Every structure is written in structure tokens, then in C-alpha cells.
Length: 560
Image 1 (cartoon, rainbow, N blue to C red):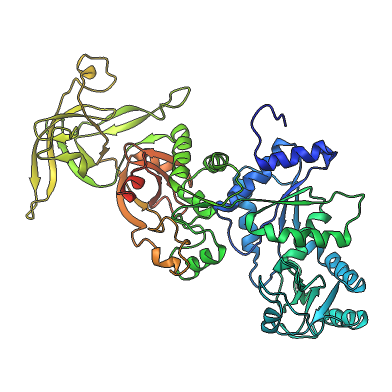
Image 2 (cartoon, rainbow, N blue to C red):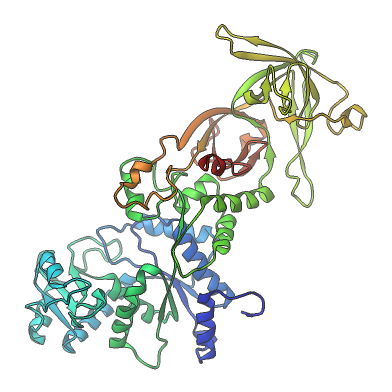
């Protein structure tokens, strides 16, 4: 990568320094190492874009490695979802790897640590070990089992592997120091007993490696050159290196762990534990609920892979955690959809409009542009008739001077059609308007070439022909949380901030061209926002999700 083409972030500077110090370009290898215990979220999206982006920039391979060391929480469903999300974002991995691929090697290395008197089997309870470990300001005390003989440790560890002991009776710990300033270095656990079915290895194993043991050694086995983690793993780096020191062969590439800041998104949570709570307690409909911060949820809502990649590039990489306003993501979504989404007619809060001087049986098919952003303009046919639906808020009987939509006695243009003039209304017994009557200028049809068609009026509104309208279920989403940082106050349960109005389901009417729309097809409903076809849609019932509005009105409301 040419450093002259752009300024480098600190991650890229680290790589460039290593290359200058003699690391061969062909030894570069990166990885994305998710745990298959839930769906990926927007924070993972940034990490995916970072690691795979580095692979593209440096023409280096990137592994997708599943850290599947906790079978009690892992499922094949999550593996499949992760692979689907990474591919959807537009990335390809060089090797699909699993920590479970290395279970035998990790076990053999653990045996080697025991033989080198750098690991021992501890038979204390977890509560006893927690007390014995000390505090950040007071040193720990040695376990009464710390000086077991090599032979006894080997025997116990093998029996742990064979499943002779119950969960919690023994663990294997590294023998480092109980006086270390870094609490993670105080004889950390390497293996624990778990009698749980593993989604890949079945019941072959009764002991499973801890993350810190499996992660760095897996990097080494795959010859990953740079292992990039979020900042919470900074204290783990010392342990990462200690474990590598025990098995490192100087003829091979030694992985380097470095940390970058987590980029949290406002009005969301990204803890998998909390996302799981939302799913299990049915605050949402599932992991791919369009209100969720998961990649699957964002995809279902209609957010594009391009928008997510642009968002990740915009927020960049930093050394300090910070909270990114979700409106920046919305901006990236609008910017992309504006280029690719066809413009269509839809009415979501309908009121009937009757053009009294339009011939009763007449029907026209007008020409409408699909997307003015296209390099080559294309058009579709749009049906027009005597009776239309318009948005209820596009009409007022009496309006102030700055209301440029339809009122009695004033004119507006129907988009792609004629100029109309409000004449009268019909109301029900409660005084609600149920019909608006108007007249149209027969010579004012858009694009007809006549002088009347060029006549300027201040307002333009959208519409749908009632005779041709297709009923649709439209799901309008708001932020899932009312607080910008629902995780910020540890004394308040994050669920207290769940927005009770985060989903509104309404019945709308759309133009007939949308009957052939497929799942995840994107559209701009003119003057209303961007929408996409939901997976629940069928030939019997169209279902749309609102992706984002045409402008950031929500931020203005939330700041009042």
C-alpha cells in the first residue's frame, strides 16, 4: 500500500513499522475471530471492515476463525449467521478456522507447560480462588495446590480430560506469579471442566481451553502476523505474550497483539449478553429484528453493506473509546440509498381525493422517472384515475402562508401528473375529512410540452390511484432505546430505556409496480423516506420496513 495515497491510522503505522524492520510482505496475515455465541453487531462490523480492509490494502490473506471454546453458549446457527454476515458485507476469507481445530495441540502444549513446571492443577473452589487472587492493591496468595508434583498434575489433568471429575472440581492454571501487578497474570486458568456437547467436536472433550490460552496460540498456529483487538484486551496482551513465549519457535512468525478503541453507537447496546436478553425476553422478534444493532437486523431493515462499510471508514480507528451518534450511520445510509433506490409512489396515511372534472371511466398511464441519480435515466408507467389517495397531512382546509400543499382554493401539482385545485371537502359525523374534492387543469400534465404543463405552482405532492393501489403493511421504526447511552448508567437496567414506541405498524397503499418487488429490494417512497421489502412479504401481502427518513428529523426532536 502506498503511504502517499492517504494518511495512515495508527494500526497501519504499526504494520508499516514492522515491514521496515524486516517483516516480509508475504508474511502478513490478519484474522477476524468471533465467538459463535450470538449474532454479529455493528461493533463487529467495524472490526470486520478493519481486518478485511487491511487484507485488501496489503494484499494479505485474512482468516475467519471461530473462537469456539465455550460449548454451553455456542451453536451452529451462530456460525452460519456470522459467515453470512461477513460475506454480505462483501468480504472473503482465506481460511475458515476454528479454535476447536487445535484442541489436541492446545492440550499437548498444556501438558508441556506442566512438565516445565509452568502449570498446575488447582482443586480450590472458584470462590476460594477469587479470594486467594488478591486485589489490584494487595498481592495474591499461593494456592495450596501450587506445588503439586509434575506427576500428580499430569495424572489429574489426564483424568480431567477423560471426564472423571465433575465441573468445578479442578482447573489447570498457569504458574506465573501471585504478586503480579496485572491481575490477569496471577496464575490464570488455562482449562476448565465442562461436560457439554460441542457443535463440532461432539462429546470428545470434557475440558475446554480458556480464551486467553486458545486465542494467542491459535494466532500462532495460523501464523497470523497482527492480532487486532478492542481496548478491553489491552491488559491481556502481557498474558498473550507470556503464553507465546512458552511455545514460540524463532523460525516462525510471532503474532503481535495491538488494541484499538471500541466504537459504540448511540441509542443501542452491543453486548451480546444484552442482545440475547432482548431476544429471549421477547422485547424484539429475534436476532434479526430491524431495531437490533446486529448486522442481520440492519440488513433486514434495509441498511446496505456499502453504507456500513462507508460508516466504518468514516468513524475510522482510534485509541480511545467513544460514542458515535447513530445519525452518522443514518447519513451514510441515505447517501448510498439516494444513489441506488428507485423512486416510487406510496401513501401511508391516506385520505381520498376525487377529481370532480376528470372523466369517470378514464384511466391514464403516466411516465415517471425511476431515479434521477442514474447516469442513464429510465422510466416506468404509473396509473392515474379519477380517485386517488394522498397523504392526510398534505391537505388543510385553512392553512398558514407557508403551507405549500393542498388547501381549498389553492393549487398544487400531483407528482408526474396534473395541477389540481382544492374545491370542497366531505366530513363524517365527527367532523373528520373523509373526501377532498378538487378540479384539475387538463392541459397541465407533466412533460406534455404544453404551456400549461410548464406552469409553476409552489407545492408538489405524491399520490396513488385508488383503483390500482396495492395495500401494504408498513413497519415504521424508531430508536430501540430512548437514552443515547443505555449502557452508560450501571445503576439502571438498560431495559428501562427501551422505547415503547420503537415500532409502529400501519397500512399503506403503494403503486402496482411494487407487486413484483423481492426481499431486500430498496425504494424511496417519494417525500416519505427509504423503505425495503421485508422477508415476511409475499404475493398475498406486501410488507415494507422503513429504513431511514429523507432527513434527520429524529435528532432534532431528541435534542429539543
